[in-house]
Length: 453
Image (cartoon, rainbow, N blue to C red; front, side, top):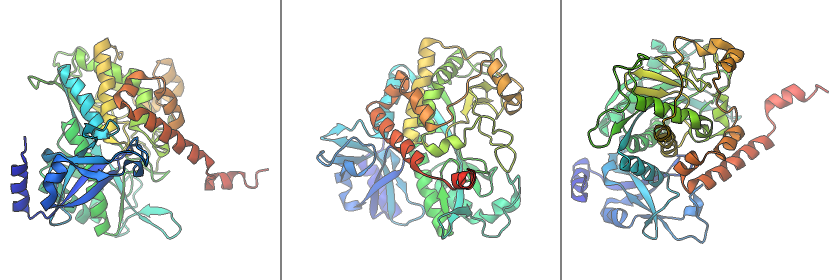
């Protein structure tokens, strides 16, 4: 447990003069205040004050008492792109009480319930994102400084990664400077799309790090004249960006991986506990989608039938089927190793605190109710089976729009409970987002209908 004396000593060694007290809004976007280091005690004991009504989804009006962001000393991170500044993840309080509309406080609540039941949730994340530039007319294009990132299947291409090696080196060096074990980066399946991987941790730490990672990408991209976007599907003809969750549950006392069973009759190395957890995810999958894919744009990444035809590269790499199997990337949940699961449907646009809270609650509900996910789908390319065969096998699909996902969420008490009081704010904001989207007239509509009649 870090003490203020420990952190103050580290700050002196690092030459820190200013602190960012940072939290997220309901969308997962970072918000912050800048505080001189001489006032560190204030933001530990009392917090930096915010007018909550100025930030989306925090349950406050202009009449509400101040919302205070108190820093978590365990999250001390220098800003590797800016000398003399450090950032802390913060928890929100109002009138000295934990603010229930704070996404981080909410995740701590859900993880606390899990720990009381004897479990800890461990998560890694694959942070896919694009580098783009914006044109004068508002459109975007891939940031391609040397005009070489133009392959139809650019994944892992040497010229593609060399094109942005300065950005990736800066990003990986920055992650190492803040103490993360960063172990690889690559050019992803779409032109202009990249991923940098770091070692997993407990769910709260990973949510904090994913938020800070997004902050880092924005700043390093600016250095090179680019915009880093974690939008789920910025280009209609390219693969979308996921925030794939890699996860397992441990015994809170012993640290044993409760997903691991080397005697698994299906040969996946999964325990009965793990299968029940998958059963819970499947039972709540359609409601979970509202939280793990929370924007209108996310559902352009999750389209049924687009698996083999939806992108320039030939694959979307995004399953829309509620299924699991072995090391098979056409499934919602793949077994990435004994005792190790990956959910490939989670969007890069999610609020990681809300997504992880909902996810662990859904999985542990399956453990509590001993839900059976059925037999694994082994060896099949789900994209090739076709919708008729998928339906014949009884495999359900994920919602195909935000409106459909919200409808499922309204009928799912477990996922609602994982969001706590944030649920009402979340649904209200997301309904407004959907309605605003449907008021727009797109260029596709103009092109298709203007002279049709």
